[in-house]
Amino acid sequence: MLDGRRVLLVVSGGIAAYKSAILVRRLRRSGARVDVVMTASAEKMVGVTTFQALSGRPVLTDLWTEPLAHVELGRAADLAIVAPATANIMAKMANGIADDMATSTLLAVACPVMVCPAMNLRMWDHPATRHNVEALVARGVHVVGPEDGELAEGEEGPGRMSEPDSIFLAAARVLRQGSPLAGRKVVVTAGPTLAPVDPVRFLGNRSSGRMGLAMASAAWLRGADVVLIAGPMALEPPHGPRVVRVETSIEMAEALDRELEGASVLVMAAAVSDFLVPSPSEKKIKRGDQDVLEVRFEAGPDLLVSTREQREKGGVFTLGFALETEDPIGNARKKLEDKGLDLVAVNEAGRPDRGVDALTNQVTLLDAQGVVEELPLMSKVDVAERLLEYLEKRVS
Ligand SMILES: Cc1cc2nc3c(=O)[nH]c(=O)nc-3n(C[C@H](O)[C@H](O)[C@H](O)COP(=O)(O)O)c2cc1C
Image 1 (cartoon, rainbow, N blue to C red):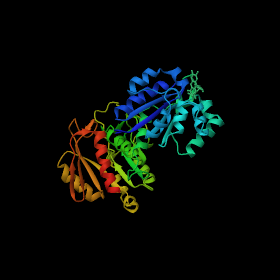
Image 2 (image 1 turned 90 degrees about the horizontal axis):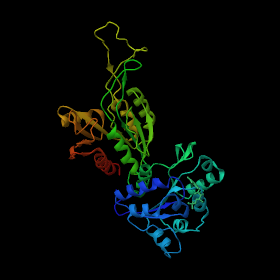
Image 3 (image 1 turned 90 degrees about the vertical axis):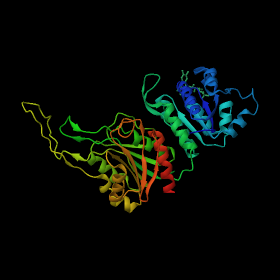
Image 4 (image 1 turned 135 degrees about the vertical axis):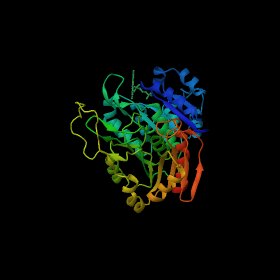
C-alpha cells in the first residue's frame, strides 16, 4: 500500500514509545521506508537498537553526529509522524523550537505532519497543551488520538496513544491523496440486521460484516468522509469511519434516511433481514407445555426501494451487493434494473470460501450494460480495493 513512500517517524519521550515499534513494523510491511529519529527522553523509554532493527536503518538521536542529516531527512520524507507526541514536543513544534535532532528535523520537513499525542489526562487538558494542539491543527497538522481509556499511571480518561493499526491507517490516508472520492460522503451499510421475536430471541443471519467494513475502510483510506451504518457484529469497526449502530432493518432504514443527505456514494453491503415480526412479544416466550411455537413474520422495509427517491434526487451512485443461490447473474441484473442500482457485486451463497461470514469472496460486477468484470477469489480487503477502484472511475 505504501510502496516506496518515505516516512519519518519521530519518537518522543512518552511511555507509549513501545507501541511505535509496532508501528514501524506495520509501515515497513506495507512497503514504506521508515527513518526513525528519537528524542533523548524517548531513548530512556525504548532502546535505539529496537528501532534500528525494526526499521533496518540507522536511528538518529543527535543533531551533532551527522551534520545536515536533519535537513536531508526532512526534505526526503513523504510524511512525518510524531508518535508518541509528548506535551513537550508539541509545545516545541507549535512554537518552532528546534533544539535537538527531532525538533530540528520536524522544522525542516516539507511534507504533511501527523502527531499522535500520548500523555496523562491533565497534561492533555492543560490550557497550554490545548492551545498548542489548536495551533498545530490550524497549521494543517493531522492529529490522531489520543484515545480514552486506562492510562499508564492507572487513571482513566483521554491520553492513550492510538493503536499502531489506527495510526497506520491514518498515515495511509494522508499518503494516498488525490482520489476522486476524497472529501465526498460515502455511506456504507454492513453486517446483519436482526428481527426480534421477544426480548431475548431474534431471527438473524450469518453476515459477519467483514465485506462492508472492508468497503468502509477502503473508502476512508481514499480520503472519503465515510459513514458506516453497522448492524450487530462481533468485528470491531475500522479506524476512521463514523459509525452508526443499528439493530433492525427499520433502524437501518431510518439511519439511511438521515445519512444519505449530501452523500455521493452508497454501498449496500449489509445483509438486511427481509422479514420481521410486526409486534414482538414484550415478555420472554416460555416453553410451557407447547410443542410448537408459531411466529408470524412479515416483509420489512426494502432499503433499496425506501432509499430510491432520495438516491435518485441526490444523484447518489449506488453499489449493491447481491447474494444469490440460483442464477446469480440473471437475478442480479433484475435487482439492478428493478431497484435503480448503478453497480451490483454478486456473490454466491452457500460456499464456505465466499459470501456471508467468509474471509474471502468472489464477486462478479454488473452495471446497466452487463457484466463489467468477474473478479477472482480473493480476500474481502482485496475485493474492496478493486471495487473502490471502480467507484473512483465512475464517480470521477
Ligand atoms: C516515566 C515517564 C513517563 C512519561 N510519559 C509521558 C507521556 O506519556 N507523555 C508526555 O507528554 N510526557 C511524558 N513524560 C514526560 C516527558 O518525558 C518529558 O516532558 C520530556 O521532557 C519529554 O521530552 P521529549 O518531548 O523531548 O521527548 C514522562 C516522563 C517519565 C519520566
